[in-house]
Length: 356
Image (cartoon, rainbow, N blue to C red; front, side):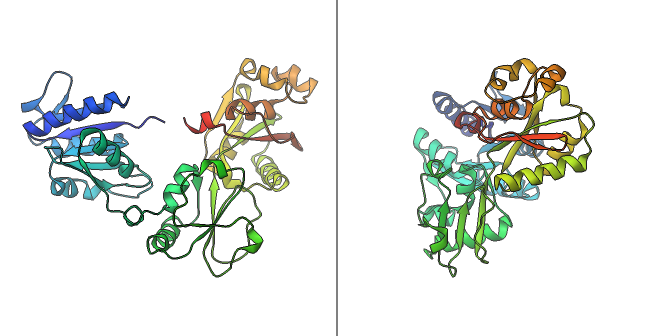
């Protein structure tokens, strides 16, 4: 997903620095929009007049992924304070002085990416990146960064982030187990102790388990980090009850030994886009649903066993497997699952799909 950047400046020199920064970012194939005072604007820039700075910054805060403020840190802190909600949804906010000597990661350093962008901007424009998060200054990995890289979810976000990042920053032991399915996606485990056998993991040290499987160790200090990389392909008869769809899903997860939180999206054929049970399941899981035409599923469908009746009805012999295949960009790993009037299949998102 492309990050949306805004650069906002107050002074004449700050506006000049904003233009310089925009060119530097463009050289790295990063697009940005400049917002400056009407007094210092050039033709392609969006302007704000006297008394309009605060509402303009609020608009940027709510619509951009990264807001770069070329002005005093105090101005930014006082301005954004009422809008800050949660590190999982707040945008990255970066502050630069108008001479581009320092670039400060102010808000959402980890999940929002402000730390990463501050380093990139500092290197590109010749500024000193200022990073203050403890895990970064101690040169260790952070739990929330690890989860972000894996497109993962973990429970009790605030409490577990504080616990694990605090231990890592203090160089206290934290064990980690990574399912082989995801080991190639992790390149930085600084501060963690890698455990290769869950049965040998000490029970008195917090253990982070990266897996989408339902076979977690049963002791109190286990924190599951669940990559949300699975696609659920679904087919069904017309007007299937919501309860039947939900029960089929949990039976499918049990059969596949998958955690229900590991799904990124639901996929089916477009003739089913008004099927209430499919929409209900996606809403219950809190994930999007995608529908594909029979033509789009045709080629993939040939790779899986199918039903002649289903093909006559909807134009594709294997809806669940083909939908999971196309939506994930990768061949479906599971056999088609059938429960009453519902069929399901699962496939893991390809690297190309994960990068979107």
